[in-house]
Image: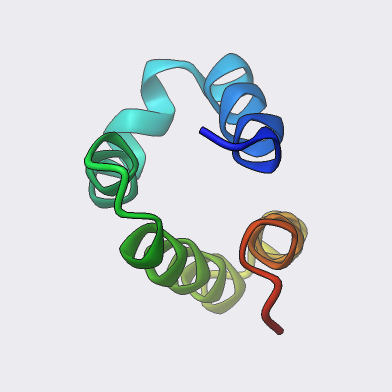
Amino acid sequence: MTSPQQTIIFPRYYNEGQGWIKNHPDSHQSILRNDWGTAGKQWYEQSQRYKDSGQGWKAGRFKKEYKYLWGNN
């Protein structure tokens, strides 16, 4: 993992533990396969789902993490 990937992924596991894996199995599997392109797409889609479900603060956080890791808007 690159330093930016570690910066985001390790705290995500630390803060949410096994719940993160349970709630985001597709992203988790993509990361384990070292498929960061697919993981990025899934990360962005998750931010949209949080936004659509009214969890704006979490959507914003995932969006910032997405921008940090993949450099996209």
